[in-house]
Length: 239
Length: 239
DNA sequence: CTGGCTTTGTGAAAACGTGCACAAACGTTT
DNA sequence: AAACGTTTGTGCACGTTTTCACAAAGCCAG
Ligand SMILES: NC(=O)c1ccc[n+]([C@@H]2O[C@H](COP(=O)([O-])OP(=O)(O)OC[C@H]3O[C@@H](n4cnc5c(N)ncnc54)[C@H](O)[C@@H]3O)[C@@H](O)[C@H]2O)c1
Ligand SMILES: NC(=O)c1ccc[n+]([C@@H]2O[C@H](COP(=O)([O-])OP(=O)(O)OC[C@H]3O[C@@H](n4cnc5c(N)ncnc54)[C@H](O)[C@@H]3O)[C@@H](O)[C@H]2O)c1
Image 1 (tube, chains in turn purple, cyan, red, blue):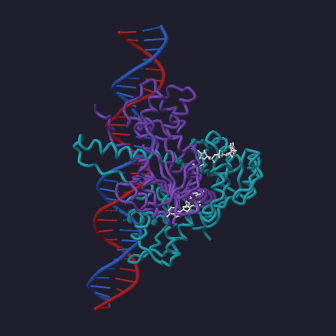
Image 2 (spheres, protein in one colour; image 1 turned 30 degrees about the vertical axis):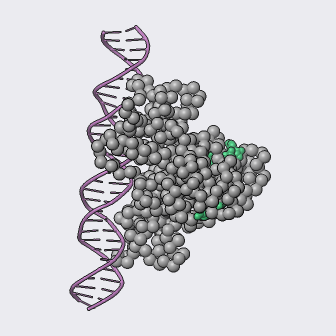
Image 3 (cartoon, helix red, strand yellow; image 1 turned 90 degrees about the vertical axis):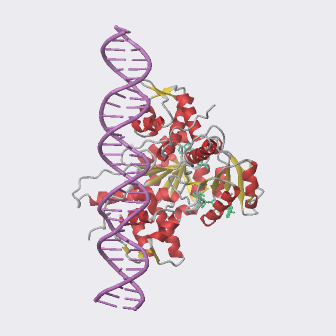
């Protein structure tokens, strides 16, 4: 019995959008919607309908022409493709402000990423319980990771400790890292790294604000007819 | 005296990297580094040196061949281009877990984005003080925004209230929004929207984990020689 | 079972982003 | 002032992503 293998390699841009579709489809299913067209899904996701179809086509031919996509089936297929048919426990490094907020956040575990452990280097924090999980010492990270077979780590330390945290995570056997610090980390080949940097997002917005101001000021000087305001950032919708 | 106008329109991909360069340059300046080559900067940013040069070339010809870039000058130029020569106060909508964590986070104001106000709809929260700012009622958002001439809003409400929050922000005069909820929001044309979705980031990592597993399992079946593990996600470094 | 309406799935074109490679420019050394 | 090593700035080719446009496929009415 052949494992149903991913047909082609899915483009990274598509992988980044599948979770968005997944969430929308789930919500629609919950309110009783059984079938959706690419147009409807595109509207809710804030993207182009052709893009939705192409994205979904990487999963297989799961739509019905003239009808649309079966919501429940599509949810299942996306979940399968993203590897969300089982939980992925995560280990959080750094039990400060952010680490505690994340640990206490249910939308985390609800989506299949329960907090499997938290570690910190500060003895004052070790032993305390946040989000129902007891904080352990960084030295014990390997046991924490291996006990629950964890493969995803989250870095929520100060930026200066980020590389240290990454090294510890890799040494403990983690193969994917989500980095919340502003520091760029180096990891061995084969380890996936995701980054969430608040300041970067705000600075991108500031750039657009700045451009808006420049454009408004310059409109009398430069004769280029009102160049359209860039209302779209890399990710996210704009209408 | 002509305002020094942005030469060309800077590609979005470059805009997203400039803040990373900026941070690194700032750190290097602080430890006494006065000059850097594109190679050195690229190394620290985890990107290709040619990309660094091309990115910086959009700002102008500020390097010196055979030498490199003057760190202080480059910091100034990037800050100017990104519109970071003055502060951008932000208003936070939703004073829950996340809203409070953000308000209390110094790395926010430190980078030029002081919290200019927080609003919530819950009377139990209104009046309390978080991060040194008093929580006001959503109804007063317009006054909050206009009093400090705020143009950036942050949404930290539950997902179900996100569209509502976005509408309130736009009505109050905000023109850029950073959305922390998983809900896709619709805004009028000309409003910039950035999105930070934790679950999406984790799901992308899960996909890579899943692929690793599939690849390992399938290695005996498929004769395609060990296809290189995708160790790079959209943003962030991987070595 | 035919015709009309709807919607998918996908080639092909266009737009965008990346990385190589090298001439031009600069500082330094002889 | 020429020769040399270094590093920028960018043309170009390549890869990826988006968008268009339409044939193929399905449903339904008559
Ligand atoms: N607080 C926020 O709202 C927020 C928002 C965005 C980004 N961030 C980023 O998240 C990171 C953490 O922020 P925070 O506010 O939670 O900081 P924090 O100082 O409250 O917490 C950091 C924690 O990490 C621990 N730590 C330090 N070195 C460690 C190491 N080597 N190994 C394990 N643990 C270690 C500390 O003991 C502390 O408990 C920072 O990089 C910050 O820039 C925070
Ligand atoms: N807590 C986290 O670590 C975390 C992490 C990632 C994403 N998020 C997302 O951030 C959002 C907020 O999370 P949270 O944990 O802070 O939730 P929360 O319930 O603690 O806080 C939400 C706050 O928003 C207020 N609110 C509700 N409707 C509002 C409205 N229409 N206008 C203004 N305020 C309103 C509520 O009164 C409450 O104070 C959620 O969408 C969540 O998915 C949270």
